[in-house]
Image (cartoon, rainbow, N blue to C red; front, side, top):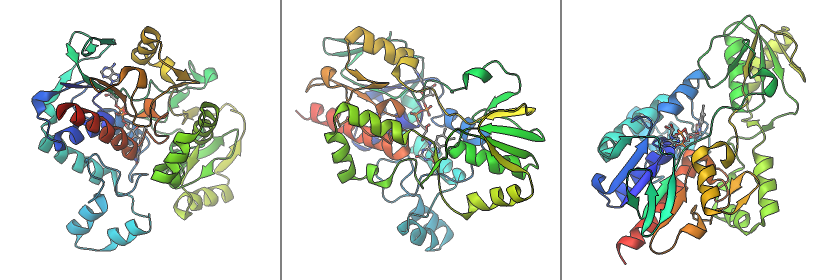
Length: 364
Ligand SMILES: Cc1cc2nc3c(=O)[nH]c(=O)nc-3n(C[C@H](O)[C@H](O)[C@H](O)COP(=O)(O)OP(=O)(O)OC[C@H]3O[C@@H](n4cnc5c(N)ncnc54)[C@H](O)[C@@H]3O)c2cc1C
């Protein structure tokens, strides 16, 4: 009855939500490249040696935000500290806590019974739903293919000195780190801790904020304003907040300041021949880089704006969604509906709305 294309964290959030809503594993097909929902994320997070989540207590894959990972940590440690930190928006679960919770949820929801290893090349609207490659016709489909690949600066694409921050790597004695977002800031600290000298190559100063978007864009009110904006305004908002940012705080600033004083950290606007260049330049952006989405848009004449597929506020493709069928997007390609779509909270936003559509269809 339902197909989820893409078995990463966003696909898994949708699955867990459907299961909590009463669907059995036999009613959901998940088509993906790896049965571990964290397979892709794990590699990237390990590559930047991430130890704590940027997200807060609600940054997990369970269908309900509460109780979140702070409550779990408080019970386990028999301490109120995680709850107090959470109330002050200062609780960031460890990566291990997040992954352990994910593994438990994977078993409890019986994800592996629904998972089929398959890369989907084409999704096409037909009578009664959507034809998903050779897998049949489903009335409700959620596409969660993740980012379309790593972004490299053009001049470094074929340079043997270059590694991407999201791929496994060690550090040379001197390293130029391109970028100024969360991955870059994490890599400055990693390289300094490894004893390297760091040149931060950046063309603009990063914004400092705890989450990757301002908090109001996660709120009902902020989101309502976003949904009222016309296309040009919305593009401007997404472009503005797509710019690099990382959290404020001593833990980020002190190691850099101390290295700067010791001559081991400086900022430059251009590359200058270091033996290693780490590209903390994130991901390619936009549906045109994803063959499945580009084909979907071309074959169905879907409305687009800039690099985004235009979605309704409930994260569905309006022209292909009605009482009989649903085509939803989740994860990075769903930013038109929810600017922070590429977060765990964003994945849950799309998941809950997809479940509402499925549930309305089942109970009609
Ligand atoms: C290093 C790092 C740290 C992060 N930290 C946080 C954090 O602390 N908190 C937070 O909320 N968010 C965080 N994020 C953001 C977000 O949670 C991740 O980007 C998340 O992985 C998005 O999940 P996804 O399912 O959209 O994409 P992915 O996890 O990339 O999964 C997509 C899956 O779909 C598969 N796929 C793609 N195309 C097809 C196809 N055509 N057919 C079948 N399968 C396909 C892919 O192979 C992949 O398995 C972080 C991201 C990164 C990179």
